[in-house]
Image (spheres, rainbow, N blue to C red):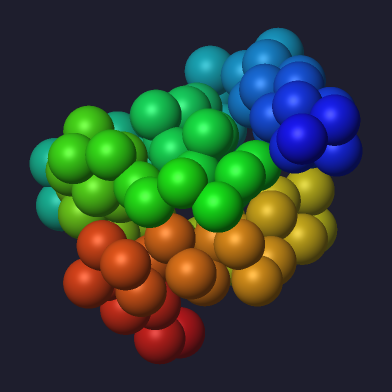
Length: 99
């Protein structure tokens, strides 16, 4: 349980760092979707624990689907998008990521 809490804190820190590090100009619109990785913050608990993703997480993941390949190509985000936990959340939400 202690490791889960530490991982959750780490994920939340990553979301905050990404929000601060990525300038507003880096936000890209794709098919009327604003690509912003912080939009996936409802998924942080599922990434940090074995909890299933919430409906809010799955909705945001579906909304951000056009952006996911861009996140995979971003060296600052790739390690999070390609993690086993992220792949499980994507699978649980029925969102495939093929780039």
